Image (cartoon, rainbow, N blue to C red; front, side, top):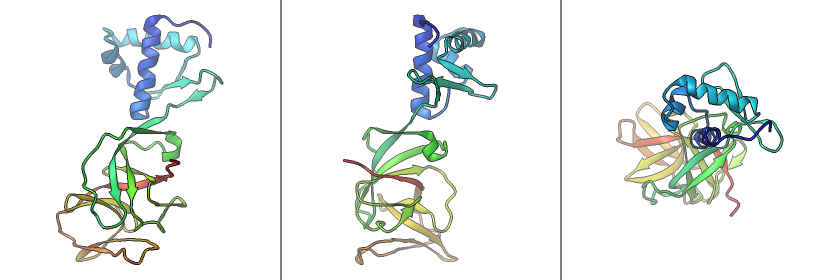
Length: 215
């Protein structure tokens, strides 16, 4: 790096890093101004210019165009996204209550999820989807599911549905008169769930990634 940071510059840099961790993108000038209590956007820009000259960030002309440079290798490093783990989803009979829990965060390189936002994670319970694959990874008990909220759901997508206040993970299919949530399982005891197409069922989102839990 090219120079020692002042206390104010350290605070600016820490704020940018934390925002990256929480959201997967850089803060805007207005957000930095608010977070740091700086009276003008020009004041924010001056700090960014200083950080860039000292080699801690690289700025582009695009909105939120701030990239942090890795301390060790002097390469541009987009900070890992912190995806909240909100509980469990049952890949079987939907018995796990759909209650949001604070189970911490998993940190993911944004490149692994195509830099998508508005994500949360669930932990799989059960085996009704152990033959289903997302990007060649089977959905197995204990895995982390990365779910995109409010994603467009199409036939064949793996979804998280809330049925009787319980979360379940199934393959989605919509016909003229019904919705079918069907398993893909090595266990013959797992059976499809059939719903009227107008039933009051909530879909929390689409599963876009499966990550193995090494524990």
